[in-house]
Image (cartoon, rainbow over all chains, first blue to last red; front, side, top):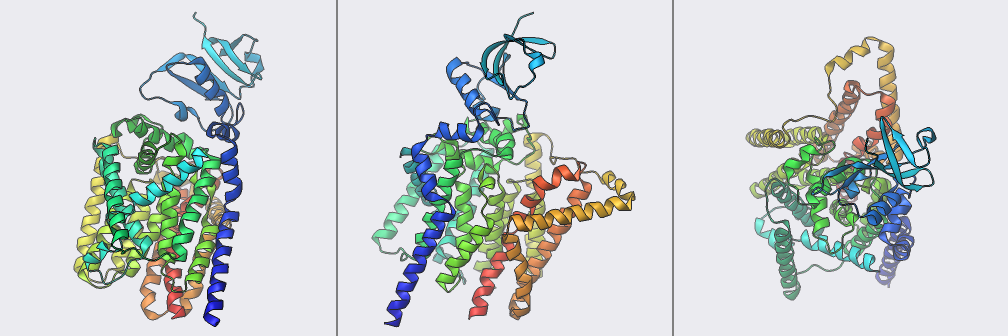
Length: 139
Length: 426
């Protein structure tokens, strides 16, 4: 009888341990969230669209513009470079295009053009005057 | 739903992959005096496979072929064990293990993002291998001086997964972390106490941030299991050969995981050599280790053209300490951040408890305690030395690096605690 009781106690403790694990790791929430939002959406939520690392904007540009080369990404915020996620080792860099993230320098932005250093760039895409896809204007 | 199924499949893939060549039946043919538990054997396989992957990373070998062969062998072996009724009974550890692993996998999947170092440094190497570039291309990547093994294994499991999600590849890191904890806690005779201990250790060492592409948990798990190997081998030829070989290849693998591992490996093995009782074995082990380290450095130099740390340490940096005031500031600041690390990772506080246990341990455990004491001592001297010599300002370096440096070695003490628990209860 005592042994049976002990076994039952063990089972309850094991169940409690499992429950603790599921709560500690927020497993129910995580499974629900994975189910609700796809991988890209979660990446955009975590990396940001045009804020933080700007994953959403870069992903959108690369998908919609169908550029066949690697594009340099410049993040003006103090964030790690997201370029590694999109880099293709079999392609070269296209030096004519740039993606600017968290770019707040309005004085360099004339509405349709952006000045960076000594070069003029044409704005091809502009998201909230903060993230830009630009192309170098030939001298 | 597809993503959830993919994650579950990845767990079984990892488990199957690391279930061979050793298993609970065939390892007995090694005639070892000590017994290994289910998770010990998985970790032995992890050490072996990751070492093989290290060798493969230098050669142009078909990775898919290797992956499929191992999976096939493991599948056949496991089926035959089931058919012959040689599998061990289900116990609480085997029930809890997949639940914990999958819970962490889901959390990584939900977060999905790579943290700073993961994105800025490690992922470049992962992508390099994922896109079939060979190791010689590593020298063209950002922070090429960082070792490549963790990234290589990450790309290996990413490439050989049924989906294209990047995080699938790095799920091997939480897997080996959990295996290492189960390997040490499964030895606790009272299973419920063992279960409780696992939960305490996990809740005091778990940090989702470090699963965002960092390699710290690999070092943590390796040091944990290698310490256990030191503590369990008996004075028998087969035991020694088995333990020495695993500790050696584990140490060599660690050299290729993180730069600071060079120091961890040196300190760990110095303490281990001190622990070995026979003088002739000490010398032989030292010589093999020494030549292995030299060989690793030469290989790295051959691949990257140079061997260097992230920062050039210079003894001239010590000149600034002519001002004694600065020396005090450095000592106080480093100590302050060590204390912060203890609060950030409470597993470090558990490590501190072993010093309290010291008063109650049996005589035969004192040598093990010495091992841990020297290991910690060397590591703390290393910690202070590294920040004294580092050219960057302390305020920039300490908050971002010190906690991770200490965390990696924090698994040593808990191995001793698990072993000690049995001794005090028996």
